[in-house]
Image (tube, rainbow, N blue to C red; front, side, top):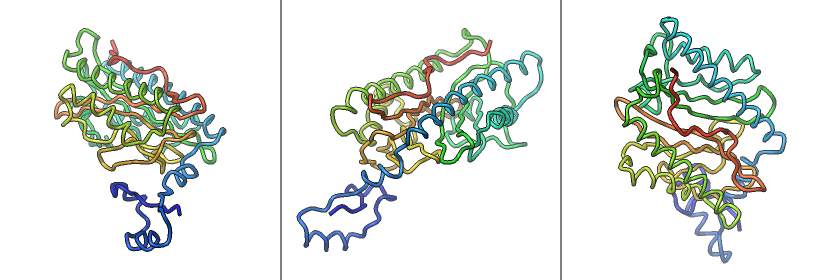
Amino acid sequence: VAMEYSPSGRLPYIGLVDAGTIEMIRTMVTEVVSSADLVANFQARLTVEQIAQHRIAARNLKEIKDKMLAFIRAALSEERPITEYDVCRYGMEQMTSLDMCSHDSFICGVDGNAGNPHYEPKEGKSAPVGRNQLLLLDLWAKLTQPDAPYADITWMAFTGPKEGIPEKYQKMFGVLVEARDKTVAFLRDNIEKRPVYGYEVDDICRNVIKAAGFADYFTHRTGHSITTEGHGAGPNIDNLETEDRRRLQKGHLFSIEPGIYMSDCGFRTEIDCLITHEGCEVTTLPLQTEITPLF
């Protein structure tokens, strides 16, 4: 008998069967098996057409990111005042011009605001963007077509020259790059050999950050399912907020986004991964390996 429930009890949106019903069924059959993987196969598996739409969205987001960085560089070069909100508004205009849409505005955060993983710049309530600041951009959008899935990326920059980037910034971002790349390597090494679950992928990423001494500053799950919603119904890369024991299957798309967040600065690198017949594919190449200097 297959039923949709969470054996670990830490995946609340799968726990749709009460304990009494489970125990009653156990008196009738030998084994009760969770149908969570079966449900995720139907809820979150992308079609061939959706994968093509996602690839276009991912390519467009990289183009928008480049234009946003160029917008900031030009404003600072011309000594025109701009705010985080101005940068986001410009990015959303570029998104619309590419016939894309999003459920919410992009994120631009400088210095301490980059250290708040839930920061959202608002009109009249955002910081000015100046020289020699750490800058985080988080973009997510999809094509304005039926059933199109999202793409989702985060990029780190510094509004000054490379030599001006503080050493501690380089160190912390380097830890995230290592965590991200080891996570992708784990997926590629194992996804074709055995079942791989969201919770264990989170552990691989989190353990790198923990070993570097920043465990207390990585305050969210490693990644989330991506479908026609920015946060989809498929397996999440999560052993922090929930223990996601759903298996990653072909057609599942999800983010890998380790972060380190402090009061005066914050860092995140975010990529999208797709499980295909050839294994695990990063769809948001090229990977960022260093903080991008704007001058």
